[in-house]
Length: 480
Image 1 (cartoon, rainbow, N blue to C red):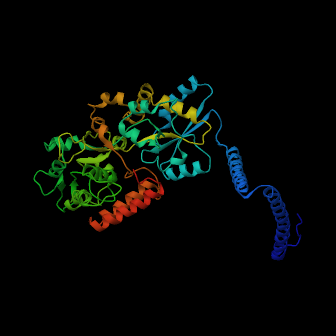
Image 2: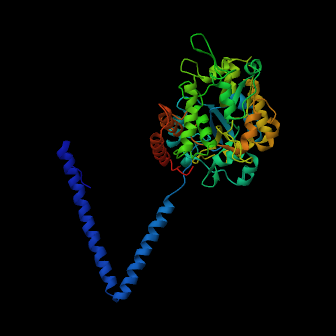
Image 3: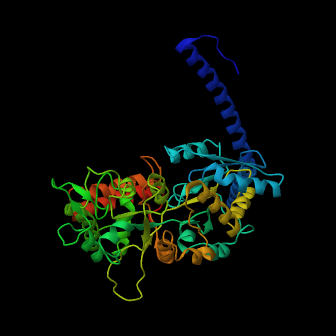
């Protein structure tokens, strides 16, 4: 093809002109030849036969194109065979290395590199790395994230663990959270859920018992009631809070508490409209009006750790920070307060929020990665991992396995969560997922923030429902 050597706009135009001229000549010649070919073919057949011949040619052409495309489409994998890179967030390197070393010893062809990531911008960093085909082979995600990462998640092969075996191994909510299009897309190494932390010294000195219902809870924290655990100073400042609850910027895990109340009141979280939703959200907001908490106090987790809060809502993992901040604090957890039951068989609800390990769909080490995670999720492996965690941080994590549940039932920290695990629920309202401003948890949280600020109204709930529908439609998750 001739190209002009002239530079600038005119040169560019000239070059295009030459190219177009050549293409036109080829196009005309090809068209003339095809026309002549079909005229010759059709001249030999009657009108009815011409139609059959034309249909045959069209079908043959379509099959040829389809076959060519299928042959040209090959599955591409990334990474180096036998070298597994694992991004973690909630496990320290010193805690997992002994198990990694033991696995590598049993599997000489496998090498595993564990890299603990920073919480800051974790979800964005992971998303970008996967989109750019840089891995990692294994990565940690929150239990509310599978739908957000759907295209990047490998399916757990039945040859490694059948779905029925998975269901019989882990708590029901884990199977529910990690099932995507009928397949399992993650393996848990922990289980966690919202629970109620109790300052044992405060309850002992006030001769109080933990609440079983929300009415009990109000009686304990309402400063207008006799014997309240909320105590004011001379200047009406809060000296001791009965509970860290209400809508405030310094309340950690308010999202999980809101979700719990909505679920207990039988509200559809993705469509929070109507009286039940308004009652639940107004009830949550009423604690701010009671004066049990305000913006002058530290974060709710720090306030509880300092010994100035009688009750605190948070997942079990909050205990690590509490112990680190104040090793001398005497505390335990109790079952979450419940609403009065319509029937005795109505379940006691809890709200799950935990982390799991998933495998990258494009990893060249998919099968080996799943086998490694299966090894880690065995009862013996989890016991070793938890011993390492306890040695490092002073407390174990809760096993996700059903066959370990009885071991924790009477535990003063883990027992409350294990007891409610059979009927646990989950959704996208969750704090401390490090998903960034555009993550699904952050977006949904902002919707409920707008509802709670200034009081709950039907108009706000209608707007919230529409916003939630818009957010979830981006991830094709509206049915969840």
